[in-house]
Length: 110
Image (cartoon, rainbow, N blue to C red):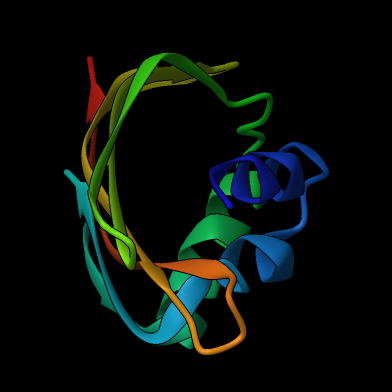
């Protein structure tokens, strides 16, 4: 699921990024703000893409399986114009067996 998100971003596909989130997901994008729901999250990713950000890469990702329905991801990340830390990506198993982001907490560092 995480790989699907990265591939969508690297295709410059904000709708594809937002599709990896639950409808009621909460995204804390430091220092930009908090975004709730796929419409707000999609608008955030679209603005970043429009501003020329691309080529995201996760560095040393760590996955923690909390149980059969929850996976936690933490990682460093970089892209062409920024870098930072993923403090918490909580992926939850959906009724169809796929995983989607319920919580996304990341930070862009100077």
